[in-house]
Image (cartoon, rainbow, N blue to C red; front, side, top):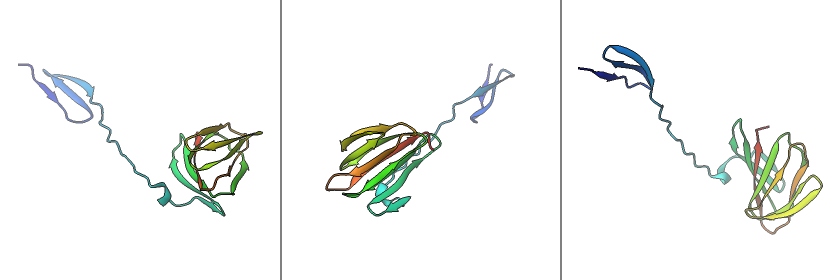
Length: 137
């Protein structure tokens, strides 16, 4: 009788009628779901009217949420990687290079690497922006 013995490791041996062969059972990956309450994260930058919190930091990308109070602005600066900015709450003027646009909730603007970009809150409520830099600088 032909007998098959399975080894219950992720990589191991398969024995069939005295013949040894290799096999690989795909390793089951446990998915880790991480819930993050953004406003409970520690500030990585805090200056009058501006606060930033890091929400994601991997080799492939870096993401921060920046909150700018009415009337305040994040001055133009340069990053060595591409960046996009998505308005989560409020409205403001976003400057990239020599161009400025007013953005509102759920609108997005891109900023190429090495091009100055800045944000000014022109609304009456806090401006909350998701800033993603890829790859991580």
